[in-house]
Amino acid sequence: MITHSSLPLGSFLGLGGTELLIVLAVLILLFGAKKLPELAKGMGQSIKEFKKSSKENETPEHPEADLKAELAATKAELAAAKATKRDDTAKTHGSN
Image (tube, rainbow, N blue to C red; front, side):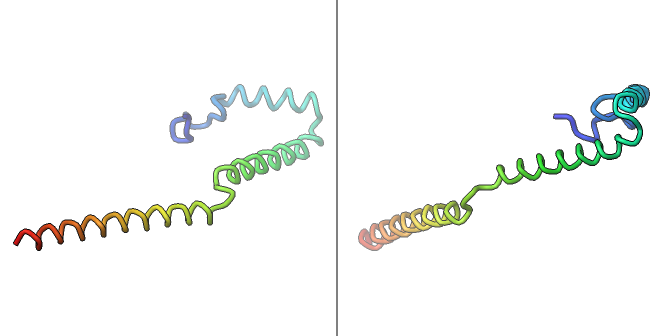
């Protein structure tokens, strides 16, 4: 995975300064200078929506149900530990 710290200074998506200038010049030729801010804004909003939806997919839809299941599992573990302790205590006191 590429992180911001692993990219060389001044690079964006693995592109250097010269490549970025060429891409910018092509965009200006294709869409015109007046249209570029509008396109950039739309692209930014699209990226924002994409990140938002991907974060929503990472979190469980029903966190309460997950917590209840985890609580039930913990209670079962505690009950098993108590039963084991009782058995050990009974064996210890029963053998004396």
